[in-house]
Length: 124
Image (cartoon, rainbow, N blue to C red):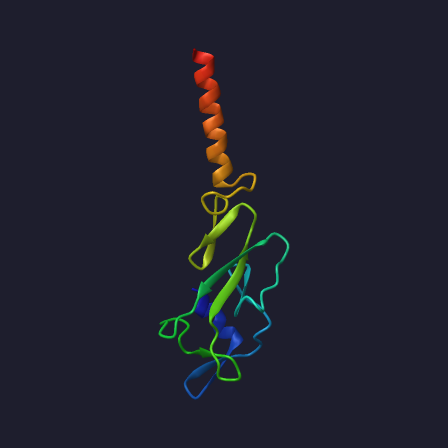
């Protein structure tokens, strides 16, 4: 998973994993991941920022530190326009329910209601 990919971006000292370059992204599954929203950089095709908090006792990220011994609070990455945040990845199918973007689920529900209304009017 992501932690395995992060290993190349970490240095191990005294039982801790130290992030080598906090501002630089780590690549996993052809997608850049960042150690917090303050480091996140939008890239072409990845316009929706996703965030996953890192809890203190997290079994995957609990032993990762910045060089100043503070810990990252979140992992951030970007998903495409027709994708949504889904775990530590992106899933196809638009944003969250109620999205007002063209192609989002909220718009699709609106189209379905209009079509149902028109079909009903044509029947009567």
